[in-house]
Structures are given as structure tokens and as C-alpha cells.
Image (cartoon, rainbow, N blue to C red; front, side, top):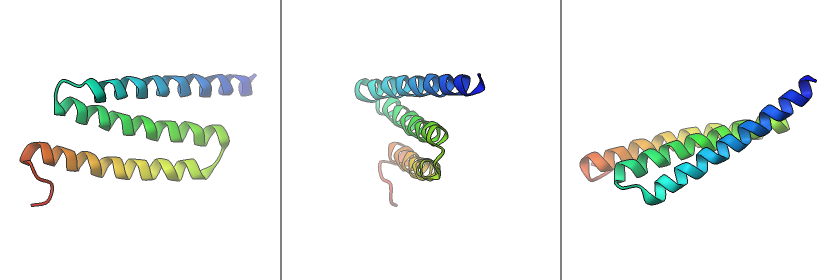
Length: 93
């Protein structure tokens, strides 16, 4: 009973994260301003990290958790770089 509920929950979360990634991609493509595109890209890497975590739980593999950590670190740095570029027009001073 519990295994079936866990399997259903993992599939449900997987579909929800994929839908969120689809909506973020649409906002990234059709965003009216650069700020909206940066926020969509920020949300997209968070969804990618969540997807890696869900797959790590599903397949019980540490590799997915390490990939989620790398996605989080690279996503954070890229968000800071994009925000700095939008504020000042340059990344490296």
C-alpha cells in the first residue's frame, strides 16, 4: 500500500515539475522584458534541480543528488551574474 502511494506521489511530482518547466520555458521565450526572462531562467534551474532530486528518490541513486547540487551552485552563480549585468551593464568590473 505504501509503496504504491509513494510510486504515485513520485509520478505526480514528476509531472508537476515538468509542467512548471514548460511554463518557465514559455515565459523565457515570450517574456516581455529582460527581467522576466531572468526570473524565468532562475525558476527553470530550480525546477531542473527539483527534477534531479525526484529522479534521485525514484532510482535511489546518489548521482542524481550530486547533479542537483551542481545545478544549484551553477544556477545561483548565473543568477547573480545576470542580475549584476542587468543592473550595471557589465559582469566584471
